[in-house]
Amino acid sequence: ELKVEQNPLFLSMQEGKNYTIYCNYSTTSDRLYWYRQDPGKSLESLFVLLSNGAVKQEGRLMASLDTKARLSTLHITAAVHDLSATYFCAVALRADKLIFGTGTRLQVFP
Amino acid sequence: KAGVTQTPRYLIKTRGQQVTLSCSPISGHRSVSWYQQTPGQGLQFLFEYFSETQRNKGNFPGRFSGRQFSNSRSEMNVSTLELGDSALYLCASSEEGSSPLPLHFGNGTRLTVT
Image (cartoon, rainbow over all chains, first blue to last red; front, side, top):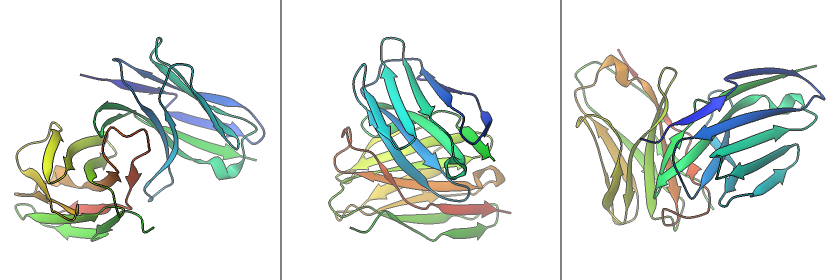
C-alpha cells in the first residue's frame, strides 16, 4: 500500500526566512499534488507535478519532484504571514485516488 | 465557472442514524471522488466515480456508500452512524480522472455524530 510521509509536521518560521517541506512516497506514481488548506476551509490546489525533475513556482512557493528518489519538496522563499496554512502533498495511486501526506502546519510570525 | 458545491455544509446526527451528503461537480467534470478528513487519520480516500460507475474504493466499511447520477452529481451515504464518523467530508471533481490537471475540492460537509 502506498505510504506518503511529510516532514516536518509543524513548522514555525520567521518572516523573511526560507524553508523546505519534504514529501516522501513509497511507490511509483505518475502525479504528485501539493495543496494548501486554511483553517476551516477546503483544499486549494497549488501544484501538479508530473515528471522527474519537474519544477513549478508560484510566488514564494516552489515545488520539485524527483521520481527516482520518490521525493517532492515544497520550498518557501522569504516567508510572509499570508503563507500560514497547512500544506499537503498527495500522490495519485490510480485515477483520482489520492493518498495524502499527514500535512505540514506552517506558522509564519513577524 | 461555479466550483464544486457540497450540501449541506454542516450536519449533526445521532448514533445509529443515516446521512446523505451531496456533491455537484464543476460543469463538464465527470469524475467525482470523496475524502474523509479527521484530526487523527488525516485525509483518507473513500471512493471515486466516473460516468456513474465506481472505479476505486478506499478501505472503509460497507456502511459508506455512494453513487453518481447521469449529470455527474454524486451522493454519499453513511448508514448506522458511529461517533468515529464525525469528520469533514470533502468532494473533489476532475474532468476525466487520471488527468494531469488538479482535482478541485468543494468546501466540505462537516458531520458531527453525537
